[in-house]
Amino acid sequence: MSKKFSIILPCYNVESYIDKCLDTLIRQTIGLENLELICINDASTDSTLSLLMSYEQQYPDSIIIINLPTNQRQGGARNIGLQYASGEYISFFDSDDWADLRLYEKVYEKAKQYDCDIVHFECFDFVKDDTFIPSSISTGSNSRLITIENETQRKFFLENVINERFLECSCRNKIYKKNFLLDTNVSFPSHCVLEEPLFVYPLYFYTKRFYVLEERLYYYRYNPFGTMQHTLNQTNKWLDHIKVHLLLFEELEKRGLITQFHDEIELYYLWNLYIETIGFIFRHTNHFPMDLYEYIRESTLTCFPNFSFNTYINRPEYDLLKKSLHSLYVKLNQEQLNALKPTWITL
Image 1 (tube, rainbow, N blue to C red):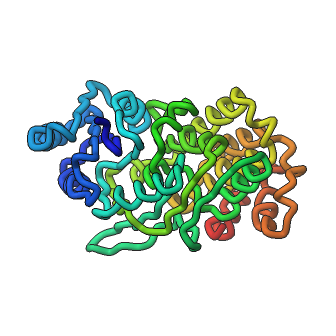
Image 2 (cartoon, rainbow, N blue to C red):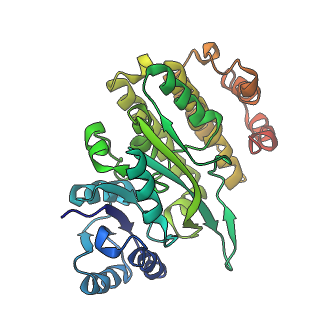
């Protein structure tokens, strides 16, 4: 009998955190017998593997360990984990985070009640000294089922991915029906950081029943040595973010989606590849290299050179976005780029 959930956990040098992570998964109120924990040791150099093996010995019916000889980063590790997944639903979990003990019981209830392809839930950010803050990833509205039955409804849904800014492309705050993932045939890029959009964003073009659960059930740890925080302080790593979005553009084009949903995808790129990327870099570095800025600008224009004709950005609710996009028209010097920072980080 298959499990209700396959939980895929890439693990790289998390000896200080893996106990808390696994303990909150083992103690889930849905019952461990309903969970398949697929732990991918991504060529750790600390004691992560031995800790995983001790858990496997205690719970051999629920824990699978995959030991990779070379580091694949989270995307590659997740792809390998997906090959082993047998559960009805798939969940991705970061191995330095932890869960509310009711997480899988609550999301399974909604998934089954509404026959959902995806259930999205909310997070807390754990900073330090037992301090928790609500994640910025939040709708601020009530839990609800979103049904998409035609092209008009999907365009409205895709616009709200940007307009409401709640369905960002994190994979960890969602569960997915396994058959839905198989049908859509999505995967993560390997050997990249900031890799999730290539997996998550294409799913928004196929989901028909999407539930937004307004409960914070996941605790995201700000690990200064983790992939995300380490990456945000290395501006050259943002090249991966751009690379992933260029791969995503190719994927959407191959699927014929850019023709059908041109303005919605263009809006996504104007925000995520240009505005959001520059904003993140401004927040995490005191020096924004001009060559990196130019690469972001040129990549955006390569994908969507005629963005000024987009049907959305001329609406009043996008005035700030439209104003910021003026910088796409001209080449800035370093002083002009630095002058944008105060305004940009508030977007």
